Amino acid sequence: MSVGTRPRGRRAATPASRPPAAPTFMSGAASVAVRPALEAPRRPARVLAAFPLALYLEIRSESEPHVVAVVTGEATRLPNAVLLPERLDGVSAGDDAWVGEGSVDVGGVSICVRRWWDPAPPLGPADPVRLAPALGVLGRVRGASPRRPGLDPDGAPALLERGCRAGSLVESITAAERLIGLGPGLTPSGDDMLAGLLVALRHLGAAAGVPRAVWLADWLAAVVTYDARTRTTPISATLLHCAARGEASPEVTGVLRGVAGHQPLEPAVHRLLRLGHTSGADLAWGVQIGLSAVLAHREGR
Image 1: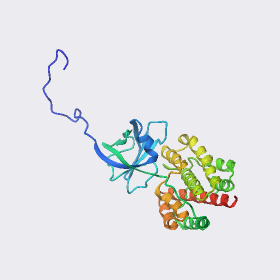
Image 2: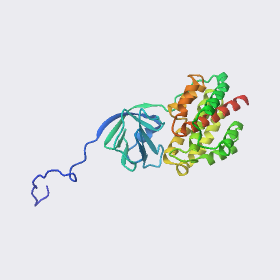
Image 3: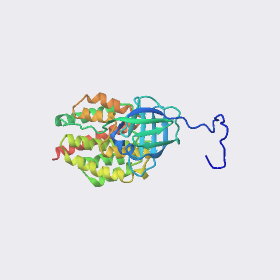
Image 4: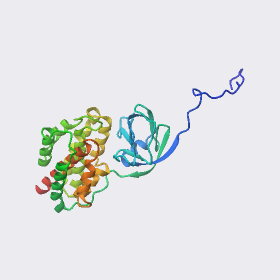
């Protein structure tokens, strides 16, 4: 109490004077890819996009992950996701949020992360005998599907495949530079193709004992992530950083497991193709290019 004043009579709270409601607490699980952001000091964020099954939060930070997805179990479990048991209602693009110190606060809900999952699970050894037939299955299912990629097969995609198969850094990097940010939407088709390629080269190259493929993945990852934030959407830039480390959604890693002979391949390809409008088809195309390159470098040893 200030000197020379007396307490005022208590007034009924009005909407303008009523304190904000206490947040609702909810437990969630998160990808280890977003652990650096969630365990950092609390930082402000904003809602980039809001959909019934997913929110995308852009953290005001220069480091990756720059965007965190908040999704329900019905949505695609992206490698940069926090997974919730139920939907968050009443959240719109532009709303404020906070990320850090083990939680995500948005829309009056404080999400405490209690469990973690690995978006880049080890693939295990790949049976070399299965790789060539798997390439045929992947191409056949993609070709028969009504879900088509978002890019013309000529131009940069053709140059990318030719460069990766030949192990040409000049051609591969030139094509990758052309593909970053190419296409409309939150995750442009060129980015999705590159993400599928990076994950396939890294995981299948390691699993099949083809170090040249992993070497190519390292080079392309460095090129793709160097200025991704200025070349494409914030959401897609973070997903490219994830792919550069071999991190992907279960639909993508399921196809890789199928290629390696650890689960049926054809159903896994169909699941991947169902993602988004063109994202699944673009990712599958990138995986096919990566597998083709692994086979080419294995045979050329």
